[in-house]
Amino acid sequence: MPILASLYWAWFKIGLFSIGGGYVALPLIQEEIIAHQHWLTLSEYADIVAVAEMTPGPIALNCASFVGCKLAGWTGSLTATLGCISAPCAIVLTLAILFKRFGNLPAVSALLRGIKPAVVGLIASVACSFILLSCLKIDSHSGLAVDKIHFDPIAAVICGISFFSLQRCQTNPILVMMGAAVAGILLYGLSSTIL
Amino acid sequence: MDGQQSHHLSKRNLMMKRDRHFFGELFLIMLKLSSLTFGGGYVIIGFMRKELSENRSWLSEADMLTFAAIAQSAPGPVAVNTALLAGYKLAGLAGALVSVCGVTLPPLVIITLLSFGYSACCGNFWMECIFKGTQAAVGAIIADVAINLAKVSHREDGWKALTIAALSLACTLLIPGSTIFVLIFFALVGSVFFRSTKVSSPQGDC
Image (cartoon, rainbow over all chains, first blue to last red; front, side, top):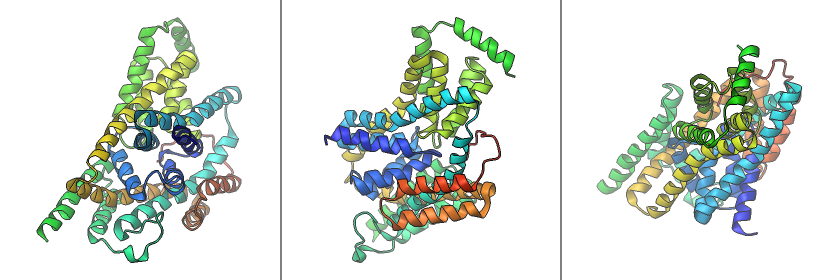
């Protein structure tokens, strides 16, 4: 299948199933783009999600543009973005018409209500993947190389402090990201130049 | 608000010309809003309401609320969905198209440019240090999102919700390739277990 077609189709699927909030796209992207298509490594995925936290725009669209660009420059970027919004646009227009005719859609409400807990679990799984990757260097998608597993104390510290400041102090995620970037420079950069 | 005000608005909107100026303005509004909303799509709904309902009276509050509800009921980014609905209501399919273009352009351009930069300085030592740091934080941020959502879910549907969350987490971790099935399966399970008694109301939880 030509690359643009696969790009479109992959993101079409992601767009179609990303019901229940912005972050639900993350597990879908992880499965389709990293596990299935191998267009990104888990590490690259963590990088783009980090960048997406600091740039404007929905996280799904940011990821789409990044992957699309990596594969096929501007054309890829555009194709992935179009794929991502195709199903949502069609469904939204349909729902708008139904809403207009029927006023309320209890079936949709029920489905959304039911989906929320599942979404929680799925998003949590992405968190697990990222934490395992950064703190233990476990990449669940490139085969568990047992000999490669090692504990990264700097990552654990950054992760812990970030989590604490988010949960307890309600720090803005953008600030957390920037702080982590600075911490990365200081702790990783300086520690390797000094040692 | 509503019945009368909506009627007046509709009349005024019908009289307002859908000319190049209008579409240009709509496009620029969406472009601006999309460029300014960092972290989380729900913020843009508030901005849109301000721009379209307060500043310009193009749409009524009731319209915006309905759009918010529909936007969150459908798949896809909330920002895109809301922009689509607003554009459609204002100027049919043409309006929807202009609106969606305005909303999706900023992330497309910004990220594509950043992506070129990313591959350019991939081997750079300091860039790697930065990304090692951000990688550690990303896990924390997503975990924070998950926990906050879990709290909301627990508040609404109690321990049944958390059980479903735990089960879906376990399935996704243990069974590769199961994400979509988990989503569909537990969505159906959940919709059976949690009989929605309240009217669908727009909630920004994420």
